[in-house]
Image (cartoon, rainbow, N blue to C red; front, side, top):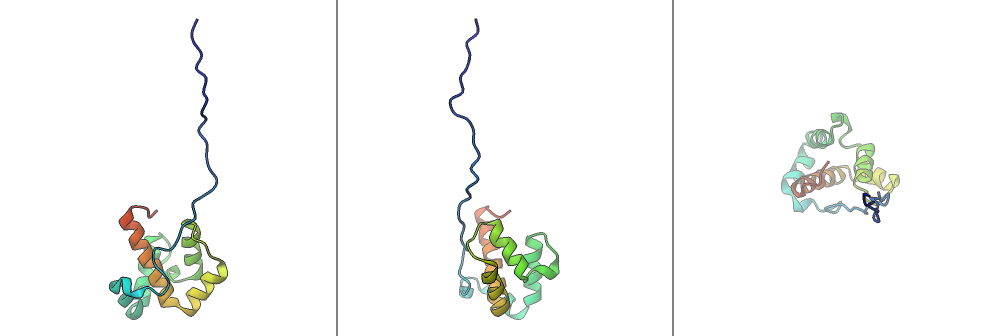
Length: 112
């Protein structure tokens, strides 16, 4: 008679995602001078780089929607209002923060 194997540990899926965070603050421009200078003097070039990194249309790089997409993708706390205020009132800082975050996540191997 063949013995029966009893499975006592079932694989499971956790619907709870870890809460993420921004790799740098909104006003941390001095942490990456290359990104800061590009965001200041060639805003649209940096916008296209961010959009390209995220496989989106070049015109969307600095938009509220791009920031919201990125934040939700990495489970970073915040709200649509936060994204709107950052993208509209501090557009260069917001775009630079996105690019710095993408760079750091690529370096850590956790950018997707």
